[in-house]
Image (cartoon, rainbow, N blue to C red; front, side, top):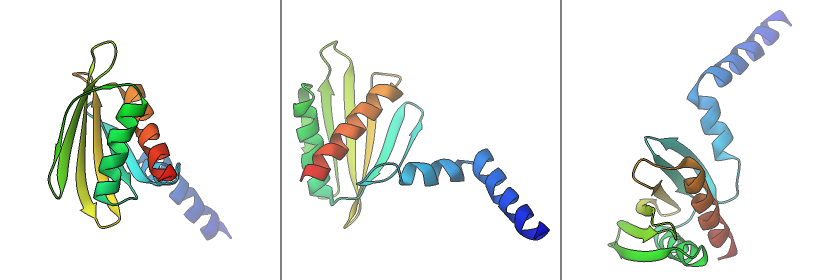
Length: 132
């Protein structure tokens, strides 16, 4: 019994002191999202959707949020969407093929990044993908 308690304690301490816990927590927080992280001003999200579906979802999210689309271009495996908020703050969304069922999306709001605003965009893209 003592060994079981020590094992549980060890697992909990690893989870609380490492990014492993964050990865597990982030992976299960929303339908359609395989995981996400915010680092150096960029929110990186793995959506559980094919590349083109995610690309269209990103464009639709930008439109539904009332953002002004500046530029968008993609090829078979990657693309970039540039937009501006009403306050002029730039938004860059990079979409990249990860597998046939997963797409990596990197969201940066502003020059140095804005985690809260990036999370709002992440959630809007997720909502659009769930509706599709």
